[in-house]
Image 1 (cartoon, rainbow, N blue to C red):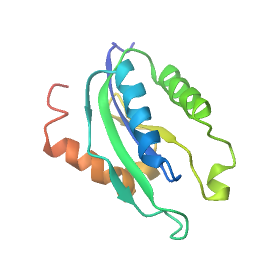
Image 2 (cartoon, one colour):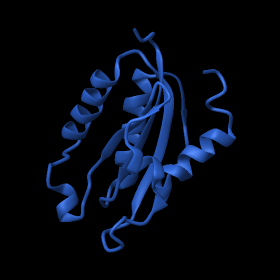
Image 3 (cartoon, rainbow, N blue to C red):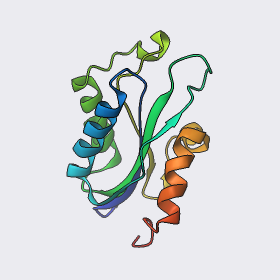
Amino acid sequence: MMDYPTPCTIGVGSNTADREERVNRAIEHVTHLLSKSSVSSVYESDAINGKDAPYLNAVIHGLSPVNSTALVKFLKEWEIEEGRQQDDVAHGQVSIDLDLVIFDSRILRPKDFERHYFNIGYRELLANGSFQDE
């Protein structure tokens, strides 16, 4: 049985023309749910395929009051509210992407965990001591 709140780490990204607004709104939305949240700086990264518009990314770490299934549902509902479509990636424009990468010290998305766009913010949070209270 898992105790709540539970540590979690979420990757945020957008590569639309209004990406800065979208990333900042997503950060605000997610940090309202989490307690003791820390947010990396917002930074630019190249698209994985090397041809789509560059992304703005950030990483959020905090304590979730809900289980991983409910948290993913919360994140995906926000994506839809912000206009995310299933075929966004295929069209090269991602309005907002929120991924639960780590939950309760378990890496749920190993590919994201290894990617530079996640590691920049994750390492910044590590260096700032964001994970010390766990």
